[in-house]
Amino acid sequence: MMMRAVEVPGYGDSSVLTVTDRPAPTPNADEVSIDVAAAGVNFADIEQRRGNYHDGPSPPFVPGLAVAGTVTAAPARSDLEAGDRVAALTSSGGYAARATAPVERTFRIPESLPWAEATALPVQGLTAHNVLHEWGDLSAGERVLVHAGAGGVGSLAVQLADAAGATVFATASTAAKRDRSRELGADHAIDYTETDVADAVLARTDGAGVDLVVDGVGGDAFAASVEALAPVGRIVSFGMASGSVPTVATPRLFFANQSVLGYHLVHALDHVPERVLGALPALTDHLASGRVGVVVDRTVPLSEAGQANYAASKAGVLGLTRTAARELGGKGIRVNAVAPGYTDTELLEGSQGHESAVEADTASGRVATPEEVAGVISFLASDAASYVNGEVVRVDDGLAL
Ligand SMILES: NC(=O)c1ccc[n+]([C@@H]2O[C@H](COP(=O)([O-])OP(=O)(O)OC[C@H]3O[C@@H](n4cnc5c(N)ncnc54)[C@H](OP(=O)(O)O)[C@@H]3O)[C@@H](O)[C@H]2O)c1
Image (cartoon, rainbow, N blue to C red; front, side, top):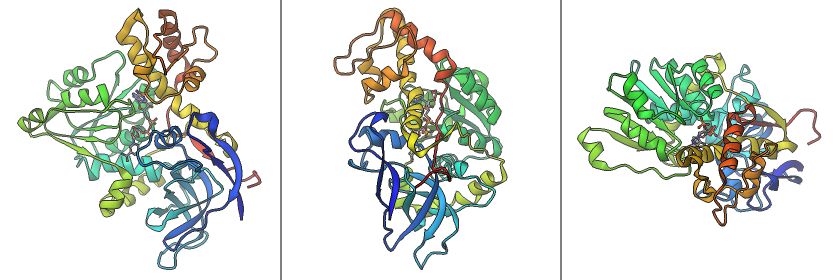
């Protein structure tokens, strides 16, 4: 059977994504076959497309790690059957009409959970719940700091932490994102672009700090995580959206009896699946009841997967540039030093329509002029830059697939 899919024929920016017809995947004995109703766009999809993802697939491949849809076939040993509504974590292949996923990574979902929202369950939802609870051991009454509190994982983590009775501190780069994180339940929303995050947290906790930090940003954010941590506190490190590898001096940790834990969903599923999946009942219940909502920024047809990918990556790219702009003041931006792994095209696309477009030259590290820096800052302040992840590629019923 042939199916419609979106392929990465070679690593590159969002323009490489190509709509194509290819044979539908055949499930092996341990896999479920799924008619895809919606696929989520995750940070990892973008990094895989760029060729930056550790152990990522080699081109040509169909990206997409999180799908929601209807089971067409399931292994006999499973309790799934054709017609079941499910969400699943694939190893890739989600941007397609048909996908396969390991049976133990395919989860039945209730009728009340719409397809688009359901795509958040296997990656962002499990990650948010795991870092807070199964890894972070959050208790009611504790204080938790959620970096990127309006992002895909962050927006769910803010709600889950609030639902657990924690006091929630969230960071975000724009006023719109901070408003969103407050609406989702953050007690304090911190503008990390203008404010020292650790100082802000310590000031609002009478110097006590937070009991738990969930940190998918790394770099400067991780340094703030360490500074803002209370004695006996925990940091769960699960990513480095900033592109900077976080480090910590261990004496600082052992003198204060603090812990830094690492979390990686896929590898945790390999090693401690029961610990990861322990989150499912509560998470599914939260999502199905609407107590925890998935922020779906937009849905687009499969054929526009490139646009969704591009939009999901844009804020982050420019976020890097803004940090540098602030640090360097009027002196300029050395683009390759602040945007590792991002292509010229993406940076150029990000500043399109603005008089002072930044002409990124990632190869030579050309330093941008003050006018270009001003252009980036004004772009970042505009509505056009206020993207969050949680973008969804929907395979519309109406499409011939
Ligand atoms: N370990 C795992 O298993 C696992 C699973 C899922 C996700 N993750 C990781 O978790 C992180 C968040 O994922 P997500 O799906 O929630 O992505 P996302 O929605 O794109 O969130 C990333 C957010 O990070 C913030 N950010 C701060 N500095 C940034 C920078 N320099 N570049 C890019 N973004 C920056 C941005 O929000 P502001 O504009 O507010 O700064 C951005 O929206 C990523 O690092 C991802 O790799 C890890």
